[in-house]
Length: 251
Ligand code: MF3
Ligand code: CO
Image (tube, rainbow, N blue to C red; front, top):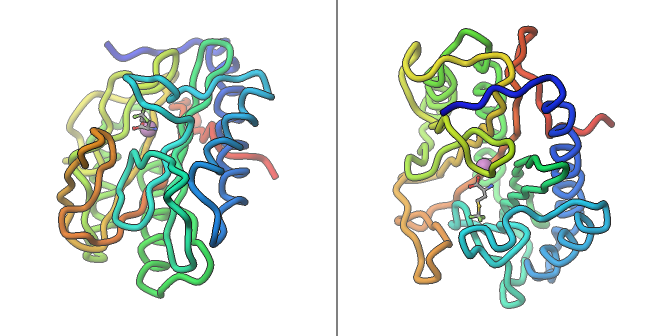
């Protein structure tokens, strides 16, 4: 079932989304050579808890951390570790969900650590842009396939790979709700977008082939060919006036 939220629920959920965005900003500011991904995770957990929120992923289906930090060929769900020390040239995807008032926000951003290659920079730019292409298609009356096809068209025109094994999703009182929001699709297909739906749009894009596999820890998803991957995500509310990005900070 796809949940349509009331205006009151959306207002409550906005606080979780703002907290998620602030946590992601803080995490990004910590990305530097020599920092471990566990240090970032610990700071994020303390920040979210200090603001009266909950790190939604901690303990979710057994997931052991407050962030997912996915470096280079890790696509998503990298588990923060004191052994993963960032170095210049790394691309670092950080995915954070924070909960407050019974709702959750979800957002991700791929940060550059130090100086990154031109091809890595181009991958980051294209992935971020593809997210905004997807958001633009998230208009009331459109369908889920319109979002996926917008992302896919943008990405494949630039010869990158669109990950299929993971998708965006509805988000609200639960971390993952219907509908599933693939980053590929056919215009005019899939569930219709209605005002009050809140969805996480999250393209995961590869420099090489899009196939992924999961490491023995049961979480870490990597590209099969070892190519770099990037991941950008926003929580978006469908409104009569167009998509509202709930995880965007007002500067
Ligand atoms: N934001 C991530 C996602 O939507 C959270 C995954 S839940 C985790 O896929 F517990 F697996 F981290
Ligand atoms: Co998500």
